[in-house]
Length: 169
Image (cartoon, rainbow, N blue to C red):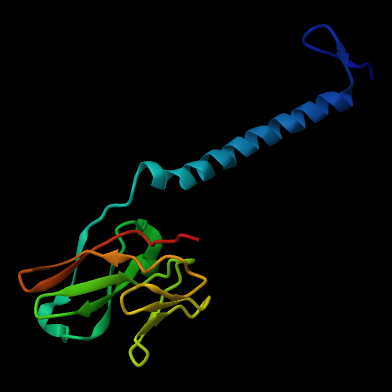
């Protein structure tokens, strides 16, 4: 077969023509896949997750001096997230009206930490980070303290202001 005539009068081979078509369709496919991926990654920068007050229980259910795990619905979760939309915090009742709350998630890679009452430490079972009862780092690889969450008491109920999972890396 004779070569195909190009747009500008030049003659191009069939191989070059088909290569151009394949590269063109590959570029279109890359854009179709890439645009939503980039949008997914950049959305948190332009549309931050809402910070809402979540009720976690009555003041009377928390004993002074104890640290308790509390759960609430994550405001940043998608509708179809199911059980993964549940977030948590460690809530300590310091005094009659004083509470302190820390995010349940490690600042290293976002793994849930556990409170070990006998040692007075929060421990990350995944990568070995440890945090003092104040949230400060006791052992790495985490470099930042646990995220402290605002707490308030309204009408005899304890409320925590939510934040997205703090993955620092």
